[in-house]
Length: 348
Image 1 (cartoon, rainbow, N blue to C red):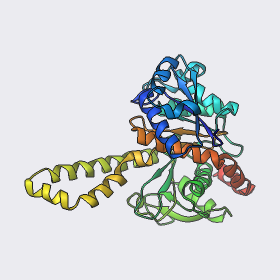
Image 2: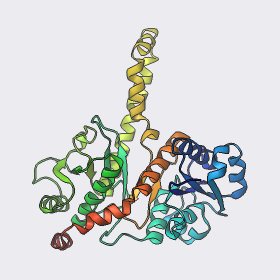
Image 3: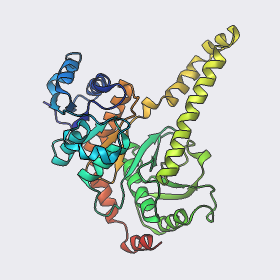
Image 4: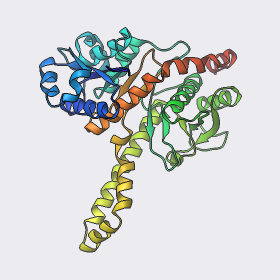
């Protein structure tokens, strides 16, 4: 008998499809024995995969979905087929209250569109944001949002992202009063766009459960100086892709250097503990699971190329947010947000 949250999994999304998604669910179930799953997809495929993972049999049900969202499919096309696709049905289970959260490794744009249409935004939230945990040199990871859901944002959006990111940080990182910084081209108060400066002014005045530290530049993202980094989705997506590309560059450079000669191979053996630590920090599977914050329900996005380990980590994110009711926490934080500041953000 399970007492933890039930998660709806789009088992057909991602590069690996059902084999990777169910393998990840099995790893997650071994780590968190109180989880249960609604596996959505082609029932013949899912039943075949379930035979490989007996640990999932007693805690999972299979929900047939005749269609799957393609990676290149436009959100407008995907929405029209939501009711017959594995992604759309998984999200609808959250709307119905049957599942505490939905998880997919499929098309991000389609997922955002479906989730927003089905679940709607929380009262007081203008736009949802895509947030993820990124590794740092500090003691904790950092929450960064928005990572691509909104290419243009006004001051109100950025302030709401700060509130939502802080709530996520308290759950994911255990930080009672998260340090929040706005991504900018400089740390001085006069730097940046009007939207960023106006958002900073609002956050300085607001009495919220967060510690606004001012602006943070791109070269400080991984230092661990803040717990939450807030930005528009255009800047955030570029920053995220740059971080991921740099990580791959460093890993490939080290691999090339350590295999260039016999002496370098000996050096690799000596330095292996350090390189293993680096590999762990650079592996995106260890930080998999981005969440759409600001909706009336929890929806988590896994990397399309995630390994079973990465899927399991994304499931862990979804389970933690469901168990600690992130939507309620965001709503409570928004209730502390002074109305005159919201009006000022709208007017800015």
